[in-house]
Length: 79
Image 1: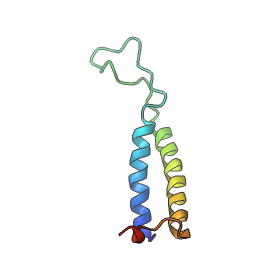
Image 2 (image 1 turned 180 degrees about the horizontal axis):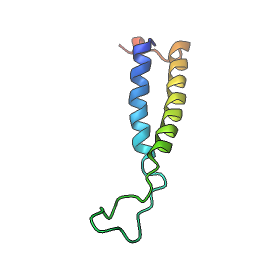
Image 3 (image 1 turned 60 degrees about the vertical axis):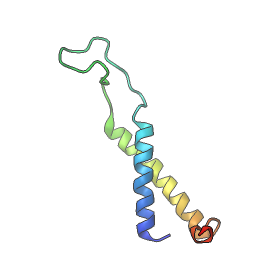
Image 4 (image 1 turned 135 degrees about the horizontal axis):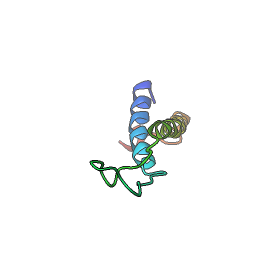
């Protein structure tokens, strides 16, 4: 797998993992201020979720890269 394929794998994996991590630790406010959405979280901790997403995506991408370069799975054989 080349660097373009690895980059595309990382980007797709990052977004998929990000959407899975977004609901972690969400707590709705008991008494929202006037004008605020009732379902909006008190403290979304987005930077923590971005960091966790990046680490998980990096591990998944490295695993996919190692499997593809070891020859265990080949996209070219399926065609």
